[in-house]
Image (cartoon, rainbow, N blue to C red; front, side, top):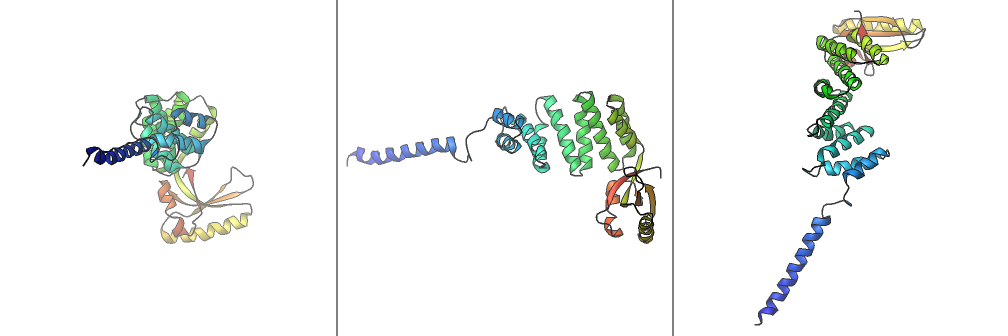
Length: 266
């Protein structure tokens, strides 16, 4: 038998395999053309956040590369703009490990704020405090303010006060100073039953939930003037040291939609 008659089919099969491998390297497992970091940044700058996220996330998820950390940061920013905090957190947790320390700090601030939006106050406070030192004065002041806000929700009043004062000493923003002063006066949380224009209705609600509060062993109701709407009265029930403990009494009180609000001067 002529050896060439045996090798020819083998050569043909090998050639097909090489072509297939090249095609896979170039396109297998890809949902479209390769997107660069410049593509992701360009999409973000023009406000095309879905496209920016798609481009940046593909690079962030692709494994180690020179662009991976910056892509993770862009993906986190785009996801934040889209209101998708779970996706933002996933990529920002990667971006905080960037070799560029300023980028890592910026990503940390965004990550801390995303944690805060999800009610993950311990993670929010820790992340914001770690990220703040590399921020410019005003950005640093805001990071400390939001960290203190998270600590108040956790009932860490002394630490919250320290970071509020640190924030106040750093900022020149009068609106932030006013917000800090309001927070410095906070010493607990309560559940707001509602805001009433009719004082008789406010009194009826206060009496009703005062009875319920005493039955379940918490402090009763009180009425306060509504600072946002003249002539109206807010009815509050209970006094709590943490946001979570206040929220936990919504169901026992029969107030599933009640707002947890800060209180001062108990």
